[in-house]
Image (cartoon, chains in turn orange, green):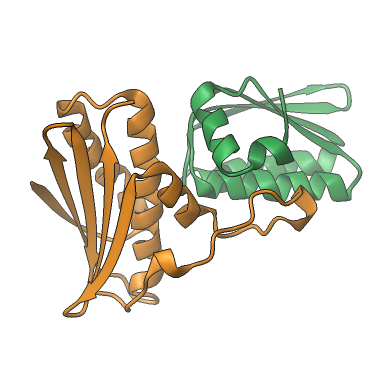
Length: 137
Length: 99
């Protein structure tokens, strides 16, 4: 398991993705799955950056566990911000025509669609969001 | 992310390449806003786009709505398979005019 603590601000997104990609590359993660994971990581990190400590900033802890057989990855985000379950938000209706589509809500929806499993817990003042993804196309 | 703009009569074409994410989406949006003011037909060439997150998708949807409102059009062309998959998951492939 590898862990990385970072100030949760938008400008640190490339660092977070580089940290994740290093682990994925070491596990020979296929490109398509890497993109799916990057999308989910971006959404969750930016969620913390924008909301967890608002209007202040704070730290996000990112943990990556690459698991063996079959190959998969667990990515966990931990923050000490306000208690917030991003999974509780209702999915947008993606079948609506353009005029009726709402602008927001796509981020978490894409996390749920791209990752195999997503779980949220709030323990001892910490938001803990764990995402799992198999590494076989 | 790189953006190159060129005009063809009434049409403005913006060729994007690289990643459209939280940090680059504002520049993408700013370039598009400038173009919307001067054209009725906007084409986004996505041949070089390798990644688009919800920040970029929001720009696309807002742009599409704006162009519809002003009686214009937005077309997105040369969409790669990974971006197309993102468009499929989010319903954007049904909403946007994609070639």
